[in-house]
Every structure is written in C-alpha cells, then in structure tokens.
Image (cartoon, rainbow, N blue to C red; front, side, top):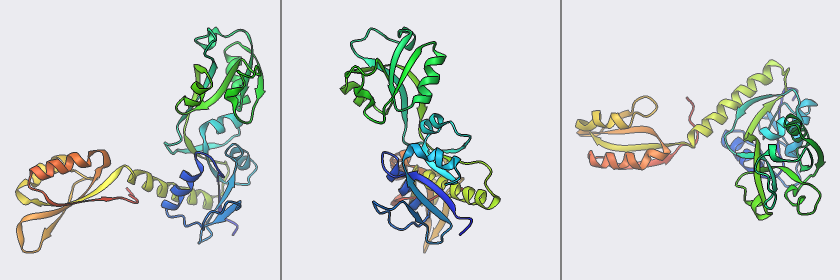
Length: 289
C-alpha cells in the first residue's frame, strides 16, 4: 500500500523490546517478531515496522526509507539530520558524560589539558563539545566498550552514555562533566503527506492512552450514600466519580473511579474508614482523554 506509515525501531538493545511492546499495547497488531525478520506489517497493512540499528534510524528517515522512528535523543543529536522530535517517551533515560581515570587529578572539563585524546561512539557531539570548551581533542571513534580505552592507553578521556554509572566505576573511571540527558523519543522526517501526518496523530493518541494508563488504576467500591461528599474530596477521578445505584439498597451506591497508581492504597484506607466495601482494583490498559 502506497500510504503505509513506515516506522523504524531498534532491532535490539535497551529500547527495542519496550518499544515493540508499547506499539502492540497501543493496538497496532503486528505479527510476531522473528529474530531474522527485518520488517513486519500490521494486519490492516496501515503501518509497517522496520528493525534496524538504533544509530541508523535518523539516517533512514533522512533518506525517506522510514517516516518516523523510535530512538534515543542522543542518537538524533549525534546524527544531526533535519528531523523533528515529536514525542518524548519518558523511558530509556541516560546521560552522556565525560569521564577520566580515577587516578587523574582532573575534577572538571576545564581542568583537562589543551591537547587530549577522546574515545567515544559519539564523534560529532564530542568534537563540538570540546571545541566549545577550547580543547584540542583528537577524537578516536569506538563502536563499543568505550570505557576500556583509557586503561589501554588509547584515550585520555571518554565520552559515553551511562544510566547508573556502574560500568564506568567498574572500569575505574570518574565523571567530570555532563554533555546532555537523553530519553527515548519519536522523531519524524519533514514533508510528509497529509494522510501520513494523520496516521502519526492517530498513533500518538494511542501511545498516549497506553502511557497515561500505566500511571492509573481503576477502582470500584460500595460506599454509603451519606459519605459520598467526603469520598469526592479524595477520589475525584478524571473529573468526578461515576456513581451507580445498587439493587434494593438505598443506603449504598457503587462508585467507579480512576485514581493515580501511587495513591491507590491510601485511597483504599480512606474508603474503608468511611464504610467502603467490596473494593476492586483493576489495571487500565488504555485511557483516552
């Protein structure tokens, strides 16, 4: 189909499975992802997924091979193509940092000598960063295991991505500067036709419904009518609780309400104190505002 929306996602790594699960939860029914499959389509053939390396996704969009892509903000900045970030997904958080050996006396980037060797998988970002900090950096591009380069004598400094700092510490490195923060983002190429833009809007609504739902719980309970005003003070739901009558019972009603997941147990305690009974808590798959 001519107007299939082509979506590029990582074929492996920290973001791949989470993104694939998110798309399925949003209602895009893809066939099972096989290890050797390079692409799959939804059953209605309106969307297709292309599985590629995370760092290749901006390049595929720039070459019109894909329309939108799921990747890291750090990758988008590194590649530098004229693309538009349309959504921060809020997961896959990490930082790009400057690190040196623990034994070095340097505490900040400004402490570094004027001439340095930098090992990194992000040569463009590293080049710009050290130029802005008046350092004559010789960039040594490494495709993996950047943190080992100082101990091998290959570099004085590394520019690398870290989530917890554990890998850096285990290689006797310390952080002396931060370049940027990154999360998983959705990025699109510019100049898309109207029909594809509409599909993107529809997809974003579906993704938002899943992401928002993960933060909520659906609560049902039998509550005395006389206590409803007190209940409404701490269980407003999306606007106000939905109330239903009970058969042959004028003293109690059933409330249906969506609550913040981190407040659900506090809400249960308060309901119990007000005479609430038959309390049910359910997960919310999707929530369209």
